[in-house]
Length: 473
Image (cartoon, rainbow, N blue to C red; front, side, top):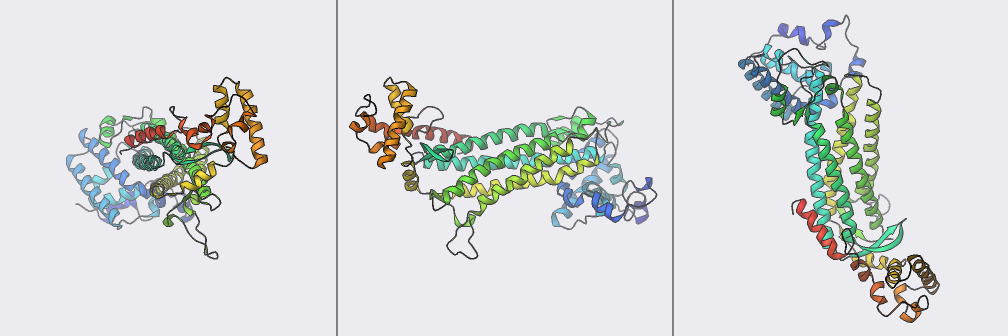
C-alpha cells in the first residue's frame, strides 16, 4: 500500500488539528477538545463504520466516482485497520474528535489519496447515523436471541412445575391458588411482547440514511439502493433532512429496553421475596448470590436486587434521549452526539442482564411444599365456594356475601374452609352438598380453570409446550 509523507498529510490532518481546521484562525483549546470529542465512546462503532465505508466505496466505484484501483486500496487499507483494532494496536486520537476521523486519518496514512476520496458524496452526519443503525441492528438481534432463550428457560421450568401449587396474590394478599408453572408463563408472555417490540423497532432501524450527506443530499449520482442492499438495509430513508437528524429508532429501542428491564425488575422483586426465609419458595444458585462481611449466615440475592436498580438507569436513558431530541430544529445538531452513551449503556445493560437471567432461571430450586403450605393460608378457595353456589342458582352477590360470613367464622375458629364439615357449611347456605370438598381443595380449584389463559395444569402444559416450540425446543 502506498504511504503518504508527512507533508502530503498536512493539509487534511495536521498535527493536533481537526479535518475542518483550515476555516479557523486559532486552534481549539484542550478543554473544548475534551468537551466536544466523542472518540472515547463512539470508537465502539468502528467495525460498523468500516462496513459502511466499504459499501460506500463499492458504490462510488460502481458509478465511476473512484477507480477500481482506489476501491481495492480502500478495501486493503480497511482490512489492515480492522486488524489493528481487533489486535488492540490502533492508536485513537482525541485530536481527531470521533471514530470516523480517526479511521479516515489512518486510512490516508496507509493508502494515500485513495483514502481522501472515500468521503466523496457523504458527510459525518449521514455516516454516524448509518453506523448507529448498523450497530443497533446487531444489538437488537442479540437481545432477541436472549429473550428467546429466557422464554425457553421459563417455559421449561413451567412445564416441570405445571402441577406445583402456590398462592396467587393481589395486593400481596393471598387471593386464589395458581400453579407455579402458570406464574412463570406470565413472564414468558411479558418477554414475548418485549421481543415483538424489538422486532418492530428493528424494522424502522433498518433504513439507510447514507446518501443524505450533511442535510440536503449530494450532487453526485449516487446509488443509495445499492448501498442499502450491500449493508442489508430494507430500504433507504426518504428525506435527507430527516435522515441525518432522526433518532426515533434509538428512542424506540430505549423504550423497549426500559420495558424489558421493568419486566426483569418485577421478576427480580418476586425472586427476592420468594428466596426470603420467611417465604422460602425458591433458592437461587450460589453463583448469583453473595454473603455478608459481618453476618456469616447470609445469602443475599444480589443479582435480582441489582437488576432492580439497573432498571432505573435504563429508564433514565429513555427520558434523557427524549429530552435531548425535544427542542432540536432540523437538521443535524451537535446535541445528537449525546445520543450514544445512554443508548450504548441501555444495550449493554439488557444484554448482560438477559444473559445472566437465562442462566439464573435455569438454576432455580423450587420448594413445592412451602408453596403449597402458603396456598393453604388466607382462604384461597373462597372464590371457588362462591362459584359453586352460583352454579347452584344463587345470585353471585348473595353467594359472595354467604362466603364472606363463612370466612369470618373460619377466622374465629382458626380453620380453613376445607376444614368445615358439610353440615357446618350448610349452615351458611342449604344449597351446599357433599361434593363441596372437591371444590375447596387446591387441586380442584386450579383444575377447574382449564380454559385458554387459565391456571389448570393441563392448560399450563399446553401453553408451555407452545412457548417451547416457538423458542426452539
